[in-house]
Image (cartoon, rainbow, N blue to C red; front, side, top):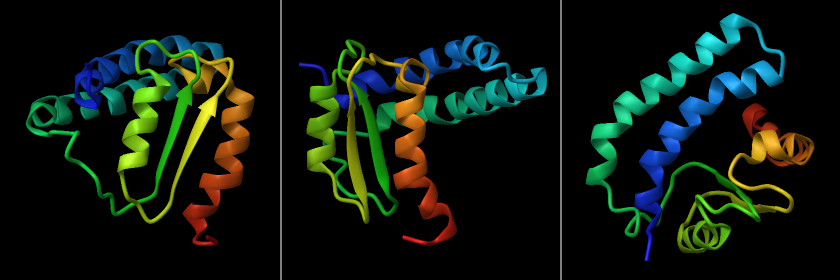
Length: 130
């Protein structure tokens, strides 16, 4: 049986590869694309050595809000596995979004739904209104 840990490093790598394609589709500037790639590359460099040391099956508490967007048709990280992880964790605030009609790249596959959820539930946290 696959665990959450077995999915994380490949997901970080795939996310980096998708940045240019998604950015071009959204008509972002070349500076936006470069900045996104730099951020993702830096994240991978920092986390690559740390991830194997973390047993995500034992991670149960977060000190920050946790929001998981899971595509209903995702075969890379099945939403059932993401939901099991979500149900197991504790956070000051958490919400699970099962996104119908999306697979792994919820942000690009169902951008309208993602944006509405982001604006309604997550954005208000940045100004302290929730």
